[in-house]
Amino acid sequence: MSWFTRKDKGIQTPTEAKREAPDGLWYQCPSCKKAIHTREHRVFAFTCSNCNYHEKIGSQEYFELLFDETKYTELDPMMGSGDPLEFTDTKKYVDRIKSTEYKTGLKDAVRTAVGNMNGLPLTISAMDFSFIGGSMGSVVGEKIARGIDYSLKHKQPFLMISRSGGARMMEAGFSLMQMAKTSAKLALLAEAGIPYISLLTDPTTGGVTASYAMLGDFNISEPGALIGFAGPRVIKETIGKDLPKGFQSAEFVLEHGFLDFIVDRKDLKDKLTSLLQMLQ
Image (cartoon, rainbow, N blue to C red; front, top):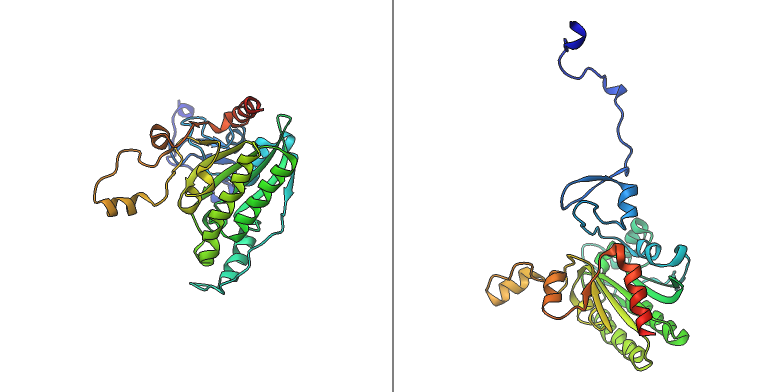
């Protein structure tokens, strides 16, 4: 009978009657390509429910994930970069800063905040890769240093969440000085017996890896994070040899003794709480 047989082939819906899914409603995992609802993706701490791929997130997401009821006080929120060298490449540094501030809503590549995590007081400095590749300039070093000062004054643990391409070339020597500055501040934290936990996320490279990112009482990482100083291509060209499989991944770095453990982001708050309770 005709109602069981499709007479007209093809979809006949006119273009104006078609409905599009609202932007931002679905998230497609770049690893396994599975599409999941953005609400589900958020519930899973921005990890894929199918393959556990850890999406790159910024300081705001980490603050929401770690601070109780997302209640925190940000330190020096309006501190911004100057232009001590009057640097210009394809555009003026001051113009690059302004355009990046406009696009990201951030003042620089790190934010520092204080609050409670499962009732424990904690200072967190979290980097934002979206701000000039999370590069370490004078503001990054100063805000981290002030966060450490706050932890020293209030005798509370300090958590550093790193995600960076390294030093900020537009500030040259001023940027490199932040390696020594933050390392010296962390030494004061160690002398005071105050815990410092360093969380390395994807990617953590360059001068950040060579300074505060690897100086934690505990150095931990998210699964699959790229961790290293120079990039794999540069190393391969320098030594003239093929690199081992998984080179510079968090799992490779853990196997070679540079990390204490790898933690799934969904378990991060509970694992950090347990760790700090042990150190009390």
